[in-house]
Amino acid sequence: MPRHQHEHDARHAHRDALQRPPSWWHQRRAGAGPHRSIVEQVCMLKRQGKEVLLVTSGAVGIGRKRLNKQILLSASLPTHVQGNQQMLALEKKKGAMAAAGQIGLISLYETLFSLYDVACSQVLVTASDFKTAQNRANMRDTMLNLLELDVVPIVNENDAVSASPDGTVFTDNDSLTALVGGEIEAGLLMLLTDVEGLYNKPPSQPGAKIISVFRPENSDFKIGEKSSVGRGGMGAKIDAAQSAISQGVNAVVIASGMMYGVVGSIMKGSSLGTLFVANPGVESPDSMSVEEMATAAREGCHQLQALSSEERANILFCIADELKKNSKTILNANRKDLLAAQKSSIDEGLLARLKLSEEKLETLADGIRCIAEAEEPIGRMLKRTELASGLVLHQETASIGVLLVIFESRLVLHKIIVNAVEEATNGKVKKDVIGLVPSREEISNLLRLGDVIGRSTTERAGSEKSLEILSSIASGWFWGLPP
Image: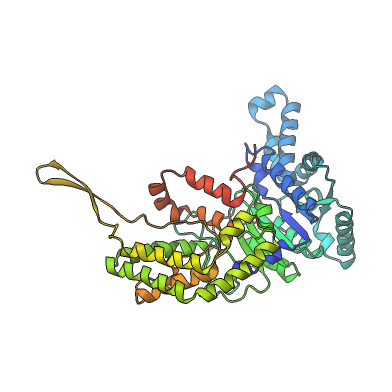
């Protein structure tokens, strides 16, 4: 089943749980920017009437910095010169670091949420809170009461009492998020990390692709090395996502928390990251990801170039004939589009562009025939220069290549045209030579496929800046974190 058929699980989720990437606390120049970004997006969801719970970590990291500073301030000069053994021994004192860091962690979140007049609270949990039914019920009631009171619960493991001297704990933050999401019966759980989703192989390897919808029966992926920070890794996130689904969470998305606006994009139905659902269904052979569409279009481009001028002209004649032959089907579909557009109060100018008629279709077919009857535009000599004896430079016209065209969606027209292409070439050119991107968010995903479209777009369009501009228009956000 294509991913877009599952997107209602995200768009209609009333109660959401988010996990912040643990690596943020270890990025020296990250500052409060990434955390402000997540807080801003959480507040945006609350303005839309959503209930949001945030699972975080970082108390140990903050506490380490605080205690290191305290040790330096209290140490004597000889201790500084000889080396401070207290700082070396600090790594074994996880509980002390967590206790010192909790106040800084919640203070940061309280300050950021207060900028949006949103109340937040701290909920510290340990392994024992999940071991008995009574403790689970108490914890669940506390979090649900906070959500009911329009407060954002910030859940964190209480490392001050759960961390042992060797640093082992009852679980990682991913499984904690899954447990909490199941307890509050979250509709959507987002595991935000520092990579863009689950890849079929380690993302550092060539040809690595993001798996859009996770299917348990598909074992075509490898888990790479875990991050140097945090206790989980992609394997832990997969286990946590499946655990959350088994506990009743409708959908889980693993996506990059480093992309600004990622939470809002996922809530709008964007295909960012990797989606986990209870019944992903069997992957249809007819369904194609945007990456597969882009690859098929490039292959189709080569197939078209291999045809003769007469064969390419025959394709255009066939398309024109099919448009005329199927005019009633096209117009019936267009009437449904117009009714839907009128109900959504679309602009009159756009509505006029969307409207088709017999005259418009006839004009379109005549225009296509004129192109077919015109002189072959490819391979025409434009310039011939003799550079030296026996060395002649020819400048000839060539095909543009693969184009991205933004236009009003006409599904019936697309089907008629691609069928005509395959029929006119007796299968030499497949119907997927023309792909139809289903949504605005998918355009954003398409433009991020630098290994598929980057080379041809950059060479022919001039610079990568055009990709950035198109990407920002398609997604509604500029990539990167806000200042």
